[in-house]
Image (cartoon, rainbow, N blue to C red; front, side):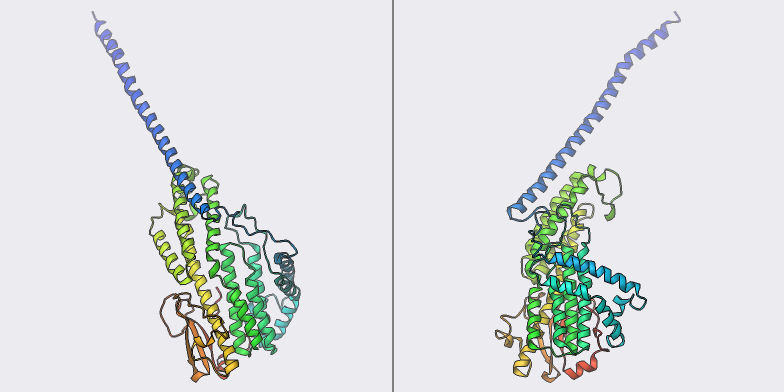
Length: 476
């Protein structure tokens, strides 16, 4: 009789066991089903994101534009026509010369003292330029060739490297600026103008469709304009030299090539994202935690952003095909839209687009300086022919200029005013702030962008000791 309760308990446990296992199986199956569902949704999200990228790339290809950086590469140039071949020889000689200069206690600071006035340093100037004679000769030989293609690996370049030739060309430009100032000190105006024209010609060798290369190209043009401004303050240039400088300035423009630069930049940035999607790189540099596999897990999210980047960059490219003053406005508007996106939603687009808009503004600033310099040289030619400066810029057309360059920030003519009772003038762009500040230059690049010509006696009084630039350099 005492065993009956035990039997009942055992029977109850046996009856409950199937129900317990049934509930466990339901939970396990539900969890498994949820995992499978999430995985299928993840696959679907990756598929739709990948298709969105493919659609954008197909649209780009349909426009006849490259979708990979390798496709954007310029055509090969035979060695016997390629200036880059001679430049490489000049770079090797330059490195050897720099090593010798840095080993000389009296000349090891040569790049620093070359920014000082010529007269107190004249002997050192001559010694340095004597040491640099061979790379200077080779550079001039290279500039005698009409085509230039440096050896970049367009199939593997990520866009993050700084091509070695950029720093070399910029250093050579500085050397020619100092050569120009030494020629001014010697009273050789034609040769000083020739050294300045060489700098402008040097900038034209940077033709590869790489954004950083074009920024350096603008820096080299800036060095040339600094040299021209300093030379004109100190010597009277012959008309033939002025015409040559105007020709080189015309060839140094970038406005017609902006779209090509940003088409290649879009392809380069898009190529570099493949390393992100494969997990080879991460986004820790822009605020995301450095978690192994993070980009693989959220690949769909970054691919969607990749498609967004391509779409925004295509709008950006179209904007850069507009006249420069419209391109500045349109690209800034695109950047404002990009920067309004949450960082977590569009990390790639926010990384790749805004810096390019700043580049367009920088190009416009340099075009403004280039245009003002061209008009100033044309006014000087007019003065040579008429013994007075023109009352308005319209008098320069068509005898000296085929047409007047527009202000790259407004599309309207540059502002021109006679000064010093007609013995001088100022011509200027109103600059990025779109306000007429009376031709006053702001070193922080917010005021007007002027080119001024003073009477010779006032220039002599205003200039610093022989050879200095006389103002804050606008080279950036």
